[in-house]
Image 1 (cartoon, rainbow, N blue to C red):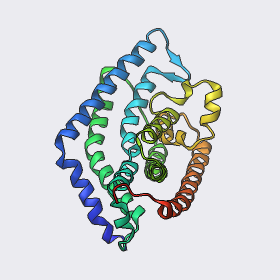
Image 2: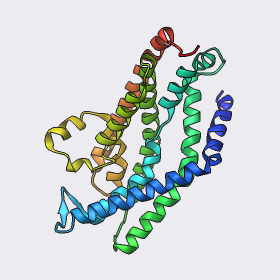
Image 3: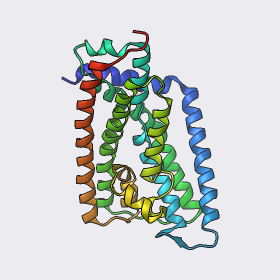
Image 4: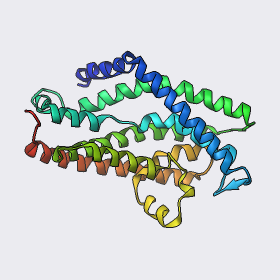
Length: 266
């Protein structure tokens, strides 16, 4: 049943490795960003042993682990949908004997797999260097690791559904740049990938706690021992609920979008 989608997975995977220049640039940007973050937080903690429940060693580990999970928070589904809308090719896929959304998912999965092969070793190496240079100790239990791993596929599916939601909205706009920026800003600002949510003011934290984005960094907090087991299970169930909700919304909106779609140039 799913075998017919494997060529899309393979093509997307190979595409990651074909454009070597983009990979090198991507890695260099990530390294530069991490180094800047490193100096920033060292400066912040210069005269502080602990801030908002985080010590310097925990902050460094936090962003190292973010480097591992970040690959699961990147999706190109909205850009793919936008491109196909503009080129007038989306309608071609709708008449083929494949599910359009499933095809996009396998393409996204291929990109993710290729990105993981690149990013994961760099993130592990970064953690090892940090632990050696700053004498950071890091111990985890087996349940913490298992919960961390359990969250990763959920993050993947959530980010895909989130991207697909914005892809649906792009059907109704002629300029999709603003929506793309909004999508990225919401994800980064409200998930804690830029700054741990513990540093947010109380009024903003109350808003963030109502939204699904915070679960994107939940596995990192689990690895650092910042979440008790009861909250872990509740978080997992709540996150699954948000994913189901997004799936339902996307199903409805996509049905409407297909009927009202205006294909540019087609």
